[in-house]
Image (cartoon, rainbow, N blue to C red; front, side, top):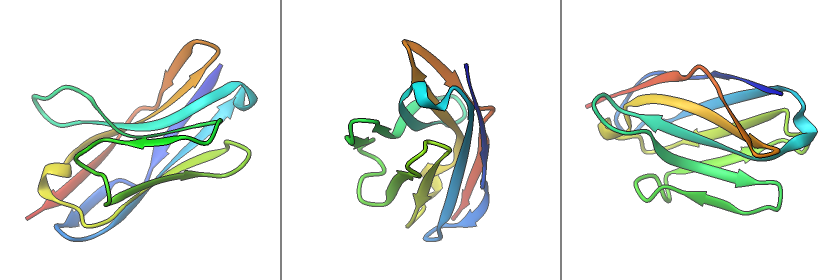
Amino acid sequence: QVQLVESGGGLVQAGGSLRLSCAASGSRSSINAMGWYRQAPGKQRELVARTTRGGSTNYGDAVLGRFTIFRDNAWNTVYLQMNSLKPEDTGVYYCNAEWYGFTSWGQGTQVTVSS
């Protein structure tokens, strides 16, 4: 199994930056992809960014050019660097890992962007 713990959320003013971290434990060698998703109140969970063991990376349209996902080589930690934050980026951010056909989720971390 793979366990995930997020950190780094908080309150920031519009235009500011935050970096989220997701620490993975357990069967890290089985991880095929890791990503970040977010959910705003009353809305569905949506993809923010995802990176695969094969090296591909994709981003949600709303964050393209502002957010960057990166990780260490051992898949210990995946990061989400968020720049030029907007109030509409507010929500709970969840880390996700895909491994052997299964999916693990972290507990989520709150990001609030004030205008």
